[in-house]
Image 1: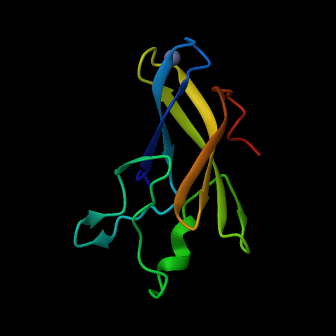
Image 2: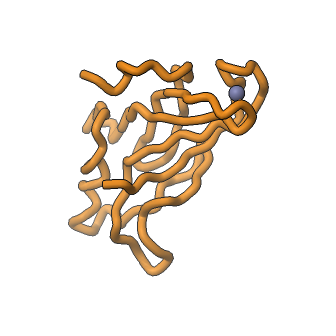
Length: 122
Ligand SMILES: [Zn+2]
């Protein structure tokens, strides 16, 4: 699937050292389907916001990690930790990070670094 969502954070870029908006692409809560407001994909979020998705009462709710390639899930805590590829608005660097999502809320982004070619290889 070529669909993803984007989460941005204001952080110091590890490449240019500037405080900049860093964008990371995630596949959690991503679907070509959606609700009355459009599909659950190609949306822009900030840390602290909640990903739009079906309500927990919907049978599709639990599919929020389908299609996420590199993810760790703690089912009890409803925590998703997704490795993400990203970039810097100021220097166009390729970056990587871990995005933490709890109960579909974008909790934090950690381990922001320069992109390593083997980051997405098991
Ligand atoms: Zn930068």
